[in-house]
Image (cartoon, rainbow, N blue to C red; front, top):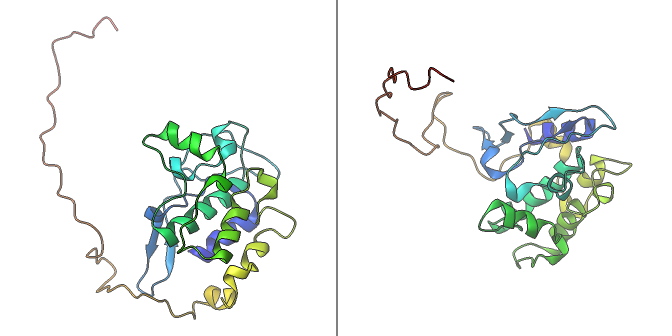
Length: 205
């Protein structure tokens, strides 16, 4: 869940956490669950990974520039997520991945923030999305506590979140554990399997 995500960041040994709206699900109590850790990697304290992965709009500059990255890249992704959850769109977006990467490299200060993003939220986003990874909030001496103590979270009880006693602002209607009514429906692909080509055209390979 979201508290577990902060615990992962606090451990400082996991990179490429899949932060994006598509990977955030709500349980029957309205609590957010982070899913799809297919690209997440345990790298150990003080180490980096050079694997290029992630949704283009969420990729940190050091990944694009192949400088090696660690959990500081996930602090960046958290800033992008907060921006998109509030505004409805990510701050960096192009017509194709390469154009998106070029926009990202211009930096967060080149982004025009919509009015719906408050000053406090803007300050947090900009601190999460610093170009220099070591300057990002959440990656410095006090780690993730700096994020939790940020003024944007003023009045929010992290302890109640951890205990599960917070009342969620939205409760999805769930009839049973296997209820999928809140998910989009996609028709199954009934296309027949292609027949094997037995002409022998590839025998010399």
